[in-house]
Image (cartoon, rainbow, N blue to C red; front, side, top):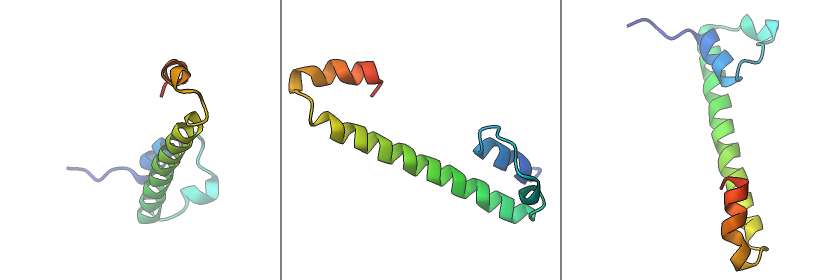
Length: 74
């Protein structure tokens, strides 16, 4: 099975944003580590945003929480 392309993994982690030229020159294992770190940071950010949104809903009256969650897509 062929090894995954570290440049492709990093581009995917950046959601298609252009990889800066200096970063493209880094060794493959460093690029792979960077892609993993970016993915981990994004997942952590998503969890923190969800937690913050849920916390913010505590300030909304109970009857409005359900409809507001639907509107916000939570």
